[in-house]
Image (cartoon, rainbow, N blue to C red; front, side, top):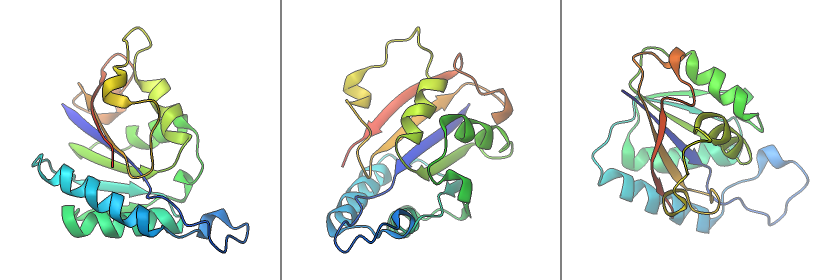
Length: 165
């Protein structure tokens, strides 16, 4: 069994926005909500072995906040995670074959597209688990019944929980 976590970056700061989306910072509200989600996750006593994160300023700052509470040892920036497709996320994960648990820190609508790919459309997604949308600072856990990430597909992925800020 493998475990995948999706963490959406903290709420971004729109004050003084100059059109450069990649360099937008995280807001005070985003900082507090990220801390809140990290504290809730800490209570679950689960381990994240590897974090793959987007190159945007707000995802890097979200990671620093989350990591102060969770302490993830291995982290790798992936520029391709910035405004990528769901298929990109799936292909990136399939290349990771040595870890039991991975956190992807990124953006919408990439995560929604990814969930559409990996959650079997024949299964009813429990809206009480997922909610109507993936809010900033939200954390999603997916269990994948495989021995290697390369075998991940919609038949072996199960949505376990969604922590909202």
